[in-house]
Image 1 (cartoon, one colour):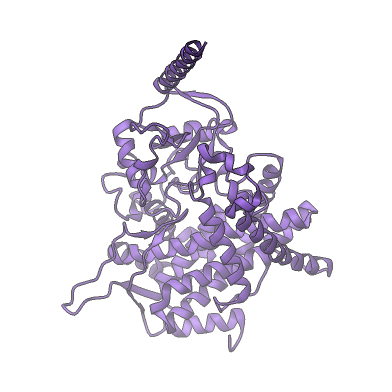
Image 2: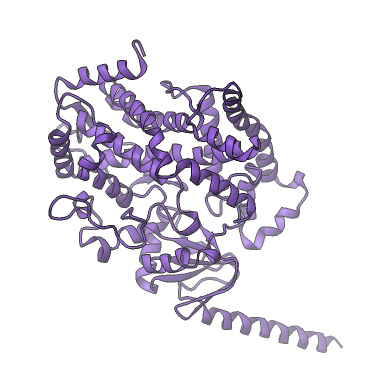
Length: 512
């Protein structure tokens, strides 16, 4: 009898091995891994996108990883990404099960939730509040914040990174909640919201908690007293939800009092009729915008230091179109193609999220002869797509806005499958960034103001040698930003301060 049991177990084990081998033969190629752990230990601890880029060159446009039992694919070309995430969006628009993050947000932060009915409502509302046409309603907010930014840089240029964080945060609060400009980054509400944001971004990084791994999903069913991650997430949700709902409740009070509001929260409240849903939709939008704009401006400053010719050409255009006696504005948009190309190039050269946010297959699929099982996690290596020399030329590693311009200095027709962006940093399919129009406008006006007002150059050491930052060094998380660096930001002329001061008085009054 005992021998029969052993034989049965041996046969079962053998069948499982053959089944696994058969499945693996149908999956895309990829690095071989270890039993059980798969490729987990081969994943780098930093700059994962560079390792994935190397593996794409080795294994092809789609490669497979087994991450502790989780089927994972990485797409390394724009064709593969567009074929699957755009043209098969109904299959590829779901998200992985972010266990801790969804506890942290009560499952209401729609950027991370499954593609269910709530997600559809929330995303539809966000799209209406941030569409290309509606985004024009926020021009005044963006110009005002740009004026404050350059005014602060006049008196305190060394803290440019702090000024970028302030302008990004304050602008998000203005657009979303209708706030007046916040001049102090230590404002208690800003500190609370940003603290919440940081917890969300940490929780969103794949593998931040053991319960996120396929082999450890059973931890979801443990008693709460055994799960510090659950206690932490639920406690934060209870505390943060009150604060975040309060921000939208204040907007509702303005609406009830008959006050007009162009804020995103106001639009969401009027369209949804649910304070709770509108509040968390507003929070989701804030979280996406407040971090990325500051990071992109930091990369922009670094690009100006490393590629001074691009700065010179941009300033020549500003001098020709705007002149020295007024600040740029959105009426200049069509007449500043090099500035617009600079926005495209900074988003291409250094995307804030080089691996994007992972997608999940909601059913089995086949592509290029490979089998892709249901629940496979799908990453797009945005870095690889944005640095593809076949698309962007032999200098794809370098910063060059001219790649987006034709011989007459006008913007070229955009690259296919980029929705006229010219890069892939805003994602794909039904998960493409809904705030991209507002983000593009913010970067346009911020960059135009910075280059109109200032010369941006590297600091020099005691030997007169420029101290150039390394553009591959960054602070990592779900989004990336350059490690802190130094530079010299100086007014381009003696008239700059007077023009900025006058513009500030006109926008926000004396003594601000």
